[in-house]
Amino acid sequence: MKLLITEPVAVIAEHADVVSLRAEDESGGFGILEGHADLLTVLTPSVLIWRHADGQRGYCAVRGGVLSVRQGRGVAVATRQALLGTDLEELEGAVLNRFARETESERDARVAAARLHMMAIRRIIAALSPRAEGPAG
Image (tube, rainbow, N blue to C red):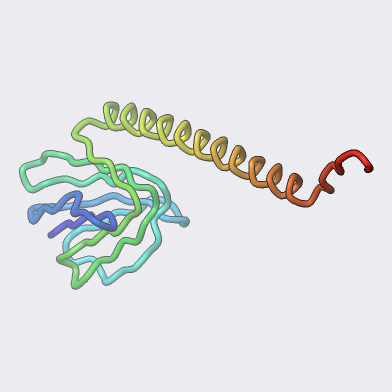
């Protein structure tokens, strides 16, 4: 079988010698072998596991996505984010590190947005406040 994993702007993996694939959607884990019926499903954040004809395994962590099987010979996965690995434990560590970095970046972005919001509010308040009048004369 042919396996194609893509992100919005990149091809993450393309293999023509895949004999089995394991994936996960809302209903749970499932397997795909050559000759599988056509299928279209929404993946949950999970790890795709496949086996090549020579017995080697491949792993790819996906942040959800869409999996399609066509004519039992091709599997395509479109995902927002994917991370390849050759060892499941190493992949787990890489995913956790990436998650931690993204969480920190998102926190920094929220703090920056809150600061801009406060600056805008202060400027609006200053613009709407009555100006101090000079001495009567």
